[in-house]
Length: 194
Image 1: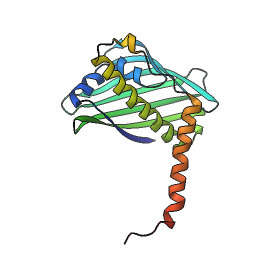
Image 2 (image 1 turned 180 degrees about the vertical axis):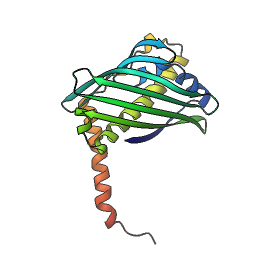
Image 3 (image 1 turned 90 degrees about the horizontal axis):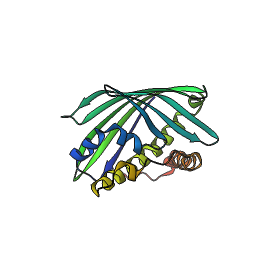
Image 4 (image 1 turned 90 degrees about the vertical axis):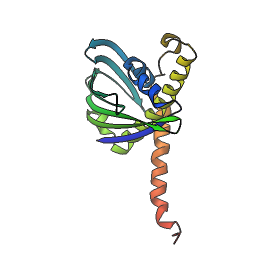
């Protein structure tokens, strides 16, 4: 399943690209993610925990930077993991491209996501909505982290992003789904502006 998102960061593109060069800092912005080991050659071991309603899944696996293009400001990461309780697996190829947007940066993210087991039971819409919520949180965390580093705070003083909480994410994803449904339902009843 291909999921595309984009968001803007109020920082120049070169500064955001420099931030993307430090995978530990990037992972610290993703709610529920933690890098546990650097294997060298741009390969990392880590965990991602997420709760969607009553279901909590914790994936352990690896991530490897497959491509980094400094000129195009594009990075490709291949990640795969399995739920620690054996309830499913996930694999994802993430491509992020940075584009100058005024005085800031637009980050375009494409995720080719493959799920099996319990996580695959959620529909595409719910998975896309949860992903959109996580990307919004990631964007806010990244903006805050870059700003804190500019003020001289160290990564230890900043800390990692809060875990991806089920109730809050579930509510936000549900709101997105309901908005989509209402738009589809009421679209035929909108006056034609012609």
